[in-house]
Length: 169
Image (spheres, rainbow, N blue to C red):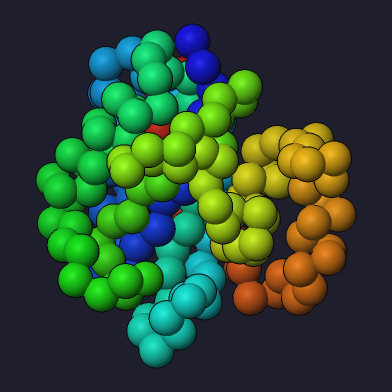
């Protein structure tokens, strides 16, 4: 079993309801066990900024398989929730990315691990730090990296719950 961090993002449709349903659907992936889930955060768009704010969260899971197999499962979940890849970094109903796999690297057409931009994105680092405050990457603690990137006040914790949280969490 390998541990992976998965980011969730949405800024189209009823993002909160999409998150809640996708959370349950992800927990049903064969060989996957949910370990922890961050709170849900409201964040400004990154990359392409002329679009609505996002909801973001990070999940820590274990998976009995390779990162590419997990990515294929996550892409199928995105499709179930209406994901269409039209504009790079554009609006989306559901975006699922594998950020990091413990003791795992991958460089294929389907997957790059660690995710090439995860260490530069406050919208994933803040929720990731919530569930793994002792996380270290390239010798740097996650809290120090968040501080180094600057103002994280644009990553605001929502006062909502996941609802129907799977029993593993």
